[in-house]
Image 1 (spheres, protein in one colour):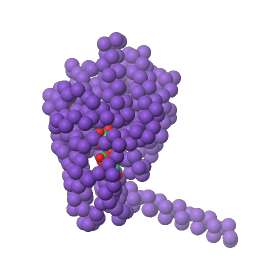
Image 2: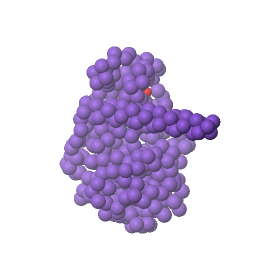
Image 3: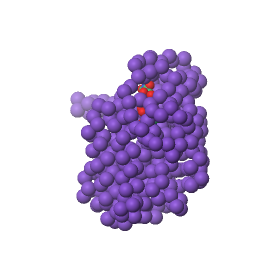
Image 4: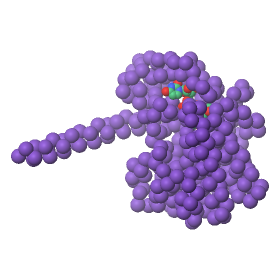
Amino acid sequence: MRYLVTGGAGFIGSNTVDELVLRGHSVVVLDDLSAGKEDHLTDIRNKITFIKGSITDIETVRKAMHEAEYVLHLAARASVPRSVKDPLETNRINVEGTLNVLLAAKEFKVKRVLFAASSSAYGEMPTLPKVETMQPVPISPYGVSKYVGELYGQAFLKCYGLEMVSLRYFNIFGPRQDPSSPYSGVLARFCTAFLEDKQPVVFGDGEQTRDFTFVDNAVHANLLACEAPNVAGKVFNVGCGDRISLNQVLVALQKITGKPLEAKYEPPREGDIRDSQADISQARKFLGYEPQVGFEEGLQLTFNWYRESQVKAVAKDAAREAAAKETAAKDVG
Ligand code: UD2
């Protein structure tokens, strides 16, 4: 089958593209590389079509779309705090960009669009776990932008018969999540802090909880949602159904690494939700979704991946330095 993956060079995107290629599908990736990296696609580069471009440009989206049967729309500007700082840019990419994708999908009569929605749509309502029938009350511009994407999908089904399925991801983590920005996901930041023997920074008291979900589970749900029958216009939680506090994460990392690093506690972030936990019974029932990798195993795999990346980066730097020295010696000679 022919897939277009927007954001396919990103964290969840590139992990999804790997699986699509493994299953023998034809894949076009559209990514502007603002957060994604071409390096993530190195192993499969000759098996896919890569288009560098933004979902904010409808002509580019049309060009990428014209042979697609399924669209996995994963391109977005992530991060709650970044959206608090710059809501216009979050809106431009997450709302206008999504509208472009839906319009082009309608024009090219694609079979289904899968939309990367977010648990942030639920907002501050205290009831746990979160069920899809609850009224979303997002409390950050990011949460609003993701919820609006879902609403557009439902409107496109009614107005034009376009099928979209929204997956509300619950704090996805794993290999290839960028750890380097202040807006990076907390597990990417904590793993690299432990690797580099730096104090992890906790915003708040560390007792806030998240349903941390290993990326393989999101990939699994993405592929199921493209093909499941009778789910057009529906919204599904994708998580593990658990709730883990940041302080518990720190203890788990101390155990994995054997390092007794203590966190530095700073004031909570604007727009932050206190607790988050998914009820995944709808995804189980309609998609046949079942978490494939639990939190602790996922954390170990993720930490190993950052450690290996660090080893590779050090080796690369050493090789570059040696080559530079050799060139300098030749010049002198
Ligand atoms: C939200 C969504 C998530 C996804 C993500 C995309 C919720 C519950 N989840 O994640 O599903 O859409 O946005 O960006 O809305 N923190 C620290 N130290 C750090 C970094 C973060 O303490 O160095 C805290 C942060 O204040 C928050 C928690 O860790 O309380 C998780 O933060 P995050 O940025 O990893 O993800 P979150 O929950 O905003």
